[in-house]
Length: 66
Ligand code: SF4
Image (cartoon, rainbow, N blue to C red; front, side):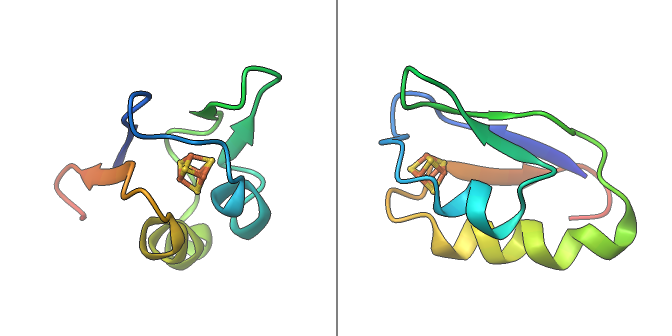
């Protein structure tokens, strides 16, 4: 799974970090970053939930398992 955050779209709502805190982290600059680009399989549903929850559609998934 490849997780990408469009920093130009991210508005720091932190929904992603609240849904999958081991994968996303919102910094002091109010931008989310991916802290675990290769999360374990059991976290993958949470990552997909975060993608759907992001109000600015800033998170996208790629890679062979997406
Ligand atoms: S939910 Fe979307 S807009 Fe909010 S911090 Fe996460 S990536 Fe950024």
